[in-house]
Amino acid sequence: MLDQAHITSLFENATEGIILTNGVGNIVMANPAVERMFDYSKDELNGKPIEILIPDKFKPHHHQLRDGFYHKPSNRIMGQGRDLNGRKKGGSDMPVEVSLSHYQRDGELFVIAFIVDITQRKKIEGSMLKQKEELEKITDKIRQLNADLEVKVEERTLILKEALQKLEESQQELSEALDKEKQLNEIKSRFVSMASHEFRTPLTTVLSSASLLSKYTGEDDQEKRDKHILRIKNSVNNLNDILEDFLSLGKLNEGKIDKRIEQVNLKDILTDTIDEMKAITKKGQQILLNCSGDYFAFTDKKLFRNILINLISNAIKFSEEGKTISVAGKLLDSKAIIAVRDEGIGISEEDQQHLFSSFFRGANATNIQGTGLGLHIVKRYVDLLGGELVLQSELNKGTTINFIIPIN
Image (cartoon, rainbow, N blue to C red; front, side):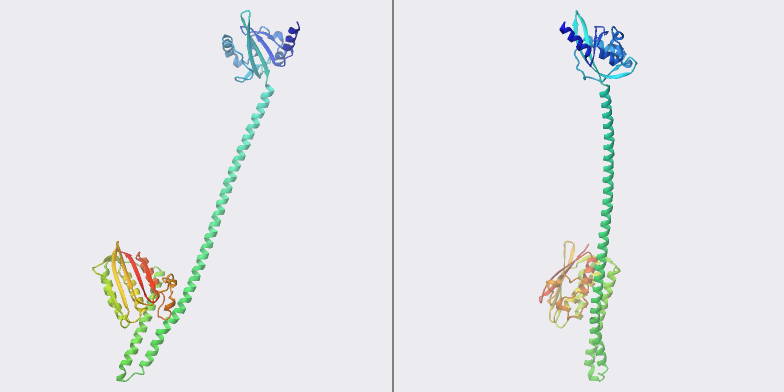
């Protein structure tokens, strides 16, 4: 009797709902917790099919599920499986968890259902789910704000970089402009200094010789007159050379030198030019040509000749009397190589790196007449022909300049 009392007390006082159904699915017993949970009295439940506690939308299929369970019964732990709902007397649904167990008595199957109302838990879960969704939305917004912020930072950084780059370019341009202006001022200063010196010497010679000519009126003074006339001619030629250098430099700087490419015989140009240059050689100087066979090339005849004239005239000017100037020509790998070698004063290593600059003169050539433009103009002409210059020199031993141009 004591055990039965305990069992009855357990059944009556359990907080979970307990329902016992028979083999046809009718309710045999239901504890008070079920009555409170579903708002039914014990008399309203006993003898009724279990479907009375099933929501209307699940009732059509519940018979099949129940029959399947009765056919092959098994215990089911609470909380496993899909979400379940119960139907209250008033027609409202509530979420529940159900665990099932079974036993047989006198050949009949009985099923015990333990039911827990999880309405509050579902509310909490729903609230948590909603909070999670809100949190995800906030996270997405933060992520988007971060992305937008990164884009804006990147855009601002790019704008700042571009501004800094433009500022650097402006500074660079300003620096280059200042350097060019400085170089131009230096060139102007050197030009004024050089021009005043170079023009003064031949003009002084012309004036003094012209003045002396008026004194030599006798027939036996013809030799003296011829001497001063030659001095005047040489001085005028020097002035003409200086002016020619200035005009050539001006045309180069203004881009007014046009190339006229045609097929020419380089040997003929070398021969003709050397014959002309022999007229200005110093006493005892000779110009030797080493060029066997005809060399044909597609180039500008005038520029080629001007290069040759500048190099040979320099060799004559910077060599003493009785020295030899050698000119050699050859073809190699579709290029023409013309070498002009002298036995003159040579050029120091320090001066060689500045030699092709405008108005530059070597330290050992200050007492020799010249503008300092010759090799600069030669370099510009060779560049126009798509060629290159190679210089070899040693002080007091002479200089060799090779200018190389393509022949095709």
